[in-house]
Length: 307
Picture 1 (cartoon, rainbow, N blue to C red):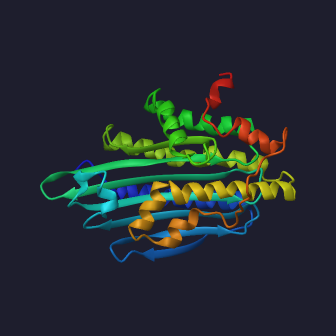
Picture 2 (cartoon, rainbow, N blue to C red):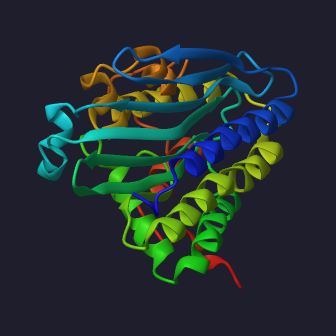
Picture 3 (tube, one colour):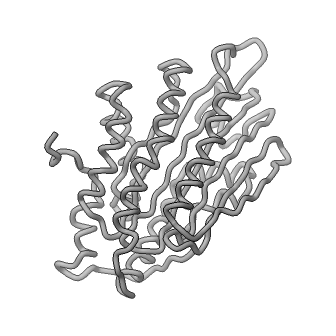
């Protein structure tokens, strides 16, 4: 356990939550995050921060949690039998931002660390996380900026890192029953330990810090664009896809609910409003159709950038 420094990870995560909340409040210009500290009776707790009815952010949450216990639930050990009989600690920051303006994308990010210990045996640990973007009225330059930030933060860790974790993100955030991606992807990684603690921790920090670099310029450039009832209705309709993915496929949501986690914090990722419409088909040639035709399947977003 000597090479693993839990306190360093925790202090980074607490600072990351602070910096993201402070920056998003400045971007919003009106709203403030309300903080809700909570305790988990089985061990640990966290602080949930939620901003509602802001000028730019309709609802957004930035959560920190650090939970621990003497044994993991069967749902967690079924695929990882080496974790049976081990005490565990899990900590992370997770966020979802649902803007009011349909031209500003919804965004999600999280970074996390997990360790399981047993007397007389080496610890089992890993880092995970990533970020992804869900536009409703996408702009190609925004999508390319998002992926350029993702690629650039990966490059110090190896040329193969961005393609690997970009592909993993495309595959993870795929809505199988709709045969479409949730958005335009980004990065997703999990079970990262093969680089050793220091290098793996450095990558997790790069991903966490990279979120604001990727997201804030997009918000700033789109938040004042005018929109009407048609755009708002389409935004709410597409938010329904977000709900479907989180409740049907998302591992973090399912694990949290099945393991007795704090429901309010787990479901913080849900949009404040969403709608469903039977057999919706966008009008030919419309901006709504462009989303379906050009942005909801995996592709190399950076291939058109001249370096």
